[in-house]
Length: 306
Image (cartoon, rainbow, N blue to C red; front, side):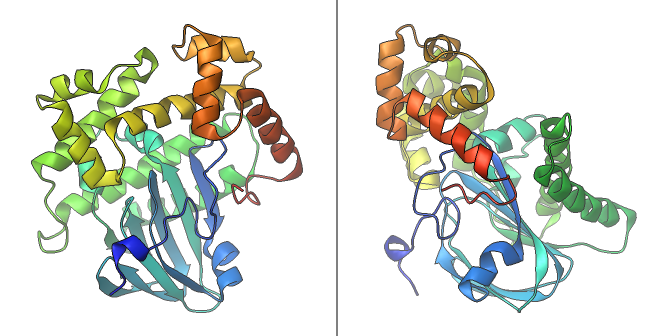
């Protein structure tokens, strides 16, 4: 077995840099990345990202942590963060890979009771010939089309389609036998609730102690849960969410850097600039210039989040 410490952690497979864009979803065909690696994706893991794979045709031998299984046409696989996973695809396999950042997962599952908790373990699901399965097949096709396009209300429709797919996955995950799907424990539920609270409060820059008190646990316990679940402290997750919102505002709005800093809860633009540079590796103005120039030379379908 490969030790966890030796398993590479990627944003997207083969990409060594941090995810530099404010987009919270990435869609591509299975072939787009697998063909570059002779259809063999070596075991790896992600932090902060949730992946969904759907096979339209072909097959794959998949590794999920310490288990190996076969994936066939009509199968949908969900891979939460930290799970070690690898694939050996049959040549010319056709399907989709959807990658979501956890702030978007939190947003889409907010109205689903225990929705996030049901998505914390890797699981494989088979689409059938019923009408519900036909709708999910159509959802993957429509999602791919919308992601590649630039039609009005693109983001709204993408989130609606993702919500339908996640609801279907959560529904089926909760129906699986206990031996196939681990029951979400109290720690998992606490982490899921922390993610919900973070989404509601990140603009207020609440301290870790605030979230721990809302959960009825200590700050040390919350940090332990976060490190066990995503290998990051609670404060790191808080800063990541603030950084993501800053990136979105820098790319998708015409606000100045000072206006962005005030919009996301900073009272001092100079302090915001220092925070952004430390977290993102470059000043806000440089990030905006790189992002805009990058979008002008490559479409969302072609972008590999360099």
